[in-house]
Structure formats: C-alpha cells, structure tokens
Length: 525
Image (tube, rainbow, N blue to C red; front, side, top):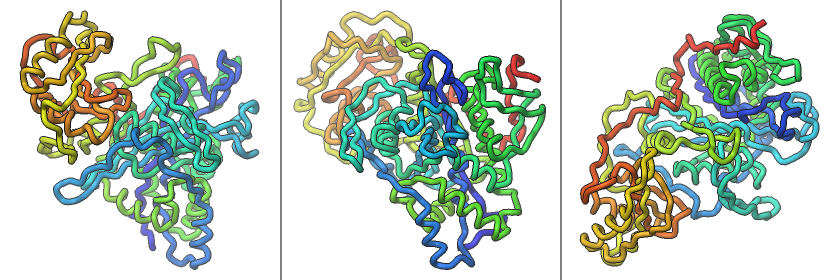
C-alpha cells in the first residue's frame, strides 16, 4: 500500500458531553461527572500506508489494534442490514466513540477526577458516520452525552454478565455494560440504523494523534480562558483568531464547555464539529504526510489509540475502508447534532426531539444526503421481504395519540379508526383506550421482522407512508398510533415528502473554513 500527499481522507468523531460539566466539574452536585472525551482523530488511522514496511512491522501494527465485539445486545433490538441501491452499492455506518476510561497513569493525568480511576468507562463522545451507498456524500450525527435513551439488554462477551435493559438511562452509560458493543446496540435500538463498524479512542490517544498530525487550526472570536474561580473549565487559553492546537491543548479544545457560547454541552459539540472538519482539511492538505518518518509515527500512534470491531481489526481492513472514505469530497460532508429537548422528568438531561430526531434518523436510514444536494430519489413502495398475513388475520392495536403537537386528544379517536380498519377487512383491529401516547405524526409500530410485512400492509390500506412504519421493541404487536395529524375523517392525508435536514440538527458543512466559535463574554481575558 502507498500514500501520496493527495490521498488522505480521514474522518473523525466528536460528540456530546454532559450538559453540566467538563474536565474539572467534580465539585458540582453530581461528583461523578466525566470529562468529555473526543474521538475525532481516531479516523486519522485511515490514511495509513505501509509501503517500505516489512511484514513484521505490518504484523506489529496489527498487534497494536485492540478489538471488541460489534453488537452484544439482544437480536430483537438490532436493526436490519442496509439495503443496496439500484447499482448494488450499500451505505456504510460507523459508530465513533470517545471513552473516558481512566485505566492508565497517562489517562488519569489528562482526565483528572481521581475518584473515577479504574471505574467502568463511559462513552462520553458518540458519533454516527454514514457514508452514502454511492460514496458521493457523508453524514455525521452526534448525540449529547446527557441524552436519556432506552438501553437494551447486553451481555458482556468476556465475563458472560448480563446487564438488564433500562428504559431511561444516560446514553454514555452504555459503554460500561459490557463494552462498545452495548453502545452499538443502543444506537441501533434508538435509530433503527444498522451499524457496520465501531472505532473507539481514549484520552491519551487524542493527545498523541493531535501531535502526530502536526496540529489542527481552530478559531475563536475573542480571547478565551476556560477557567473559573471555583476550578471549573478545561483550562483552554487562546487568543482571538485562528490557532493550530495539538497535544493537551487540542484535548482542552474538545473538552471545553465553559467559555463557548452558552456554556452548554451543545456548544461544545459544535466546537468539536469545527475541529473535525478542520482536521479533515488539514490531513488532505498537509504535504508532510508524504514523509515516511511522519507517516510511520502516525501509523504507530493511530493503531495504538484504536479499539475496533473484528471487521476493522487489521491495517489492511482499515486501509480498505480509507479507500472508500476518501471518495467523498470535503464539501459533501455534513455534521449534525441529534435534535434534542430538555427532559420533563430529569433536570439537566435531554431527550430526542420527537419529530425532528425521527426525521434526521430517517434521512440517514434512507441514505438521503443531509446537505440537500442529492438527486431526487424514487420512494420505495415497500421495504419488507416478509409477506403479510391475510388482512383478517392481522391483529392491530389502535391507540389515540391525537394529543400530540400540544393539542387536546380527540375523544374516541382510537375506536373510530379501529372501526375503519375493521371495515377494510382487518377484523382483528381493536382500540386500546388506556394508552396515553401523544404524537405529532401518525405511526405504525411493529416489534420484530416477522411482523414488518403486516405493518406495511396496514399502512398501505390506510395510505400511511412506509417511512412512518417503524420497528420498536416496546410494542407487543402491530400498533397504530393515530397522531395529531389525523384528528378526524376516514382518509389519512400524508404530508408532502420533505427530505430537508431539520434546522434543529445544526448542520455544518465540512468545507466551511470560516467557522469560528463564539466566546462567552464572561470567559474573555
């Protein structure tokens, strides 16, 4: 394998952080706050070349790479494999993780928080990288680490310990339930997007990789010092304008919450997106990467920093992946954050914003570019390979979700729609008058692949788009939730197809060289 100065295409991960803390937050009300970990630089390994290196050195690099199981959740919670396009090409989904493990003296020194040394790691940074089937574009979705989600049952592949499912837990807790395979399982349950691979890096890996690539340019619109009199803050101190950061300073940038915009985890995620985009451009433009010594150092550092699934467990496999990634132009990379809202039941936590998060996940699932530059794709009329039962054999539970969108529920709506279904031949349709679900948009849910065909048959009979038919394991059978968009009448009026990225996803283009973080005036020096 060889590498020229034009070859590098490294994609990286940055993700959320706890909304109320960063590296020096141990004195807050929740003392076990974890410092933000970032995995953007992890994908720099994809620029590896091994020409001139002997077989033994190649094996040495392979030995550096740590491996773990891809998915350790229950099979019922797993998403179906991505479908190929008309040309036989399939999308590629990689979950990028930043671990907050304090399992070494170096990680302890960089991460602080001595009380958490050698405790279970958390996936404080989580980012899904989606490469389109035709390799023309790339979409990246971050999730704030304070997001409350359902974590499925996971089984530790080493000890055999079974971690019970949780209906409302911090998404970053998933890593401590048997390893990165549980975080993958959690993402698949949340998004119904099939994940092909994961890549994970820790504190020391971030610092080492930043040094190996020679620094990454970042920008602030004022002098910033992320530090408070009570010891909060990452310690980042920069002058106004653009600075090339590396090593510990790069880690400080990626951990900074106090000092960026409104001092929230969301602002921190935005800064990480800027760093990722800048690093990608730096790797493509940096001619020093043609220097064999520099490249060797980068190869050594990157492979030591990585934990991956078996499907990426050798330099050769990583190199093959790099060839796919480098096909995507920088200007077709779109970075987003999962649309969110504050939890009504848990202070300081967030949850997916119902309609917008679902839409963003659907766009990724259907391989629709988030930059809006795709040619109009023909909508699929049906996705299931599982045949539907006869209409009079399909049991359908109908729930009244018309209280969505802030409206008062329409009395008797579930019963009315179940009667409508019965009139169409679905004689086993029944209203569930106890359900209190409120949804903006009507959906049909099914728990497992063998009922997908039945769910789609119900959708077709009612004129409900197949994009509103979803696999969700918290239902026991085909379940129709009549949303606020169908409050009356016997005919469902589907909204016009809208494949635009929700504004709440805060999209940032990979070629944007003018992006600059706004500094909170309270942290200007």
